Length: 342
Ligand code: PHE
Image (cartoon, rainbow, N blue to C red; front, side, top):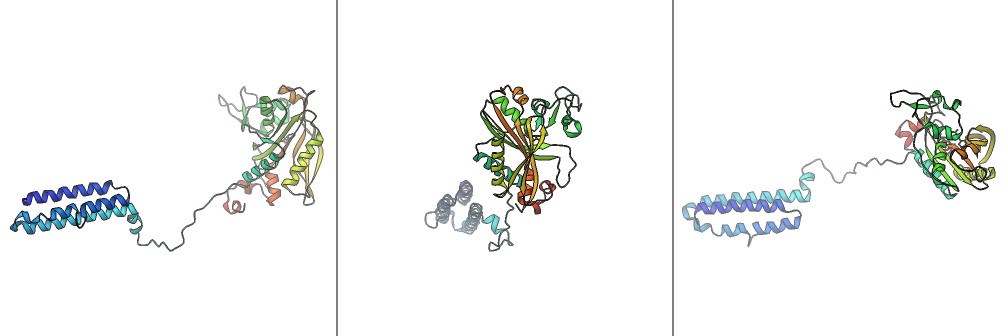
């Protein structure tokens, strides 16, 4: 073997070894490759080394030097690959890394108190057979007003009390054809459910509603309501009061009492305000009543055949009472010092 052939064989071997190490995807494969190339007895480098005598005495020093260079090159490549596979390159490179120090705990988020309340209310009402239904937050006047027996000239439709959206040519008015608004009550979902299904119906709907109120401790332009609707033959006001009482004792406590005060809503007749006695005070939580026959007619039900009750309760108010929160704005400030407590 000439010196040239010897050197060429070494270079080829270095290339082959690098390729084999690069291709190794796990430590075992890498170890096999190491034995193949660098093995002390039968390694390929060793077998070239054994032929060093054939280059001739005068070429021996050059051949030996070359052999050592290639050997350490292959060893370095092996070491780099091993570091890559075991992760030493990343960890070992940082001398400040101390595995004995406690780690930085990741911030783990949790469910917002209002969402927790919604889940809780759904669970309580679910046990009484009320199924959750949903409707859109951007509504048309038919579902927010007309089908709910709220006539065109009713003050509840005033733009000062509603968020009308601009439509088509950018006009914002309750009189524009195709006008839309952010729903001001979840009673819209009563209509949407009755349009789709036939009685018996027993649903609740929990979601956001919007009214242009200036924010203060008890008002916020966006809040949540729990709407309830039960329609069947012979549903009575006693059923309504029983459902609300069971609900209130489950959510607020056994000692809670319930009171109905006469009121008016266009979509219920008779209508009541619902108060709960809580911590010695009567607190208003929402409205309720027996579904108005005009509402049944609007969805194609026969008011002679079915009757029903509906209620709408303020979710924030329930949540605030239960948790002793005194300012509704705290719920929506995004202040983690507040939210972490729940
Ligand atoms: N939608 C009424 C409100 O927002 C509450 C209500 C719901 C009253 C259902 C009666 C029946 O004030």
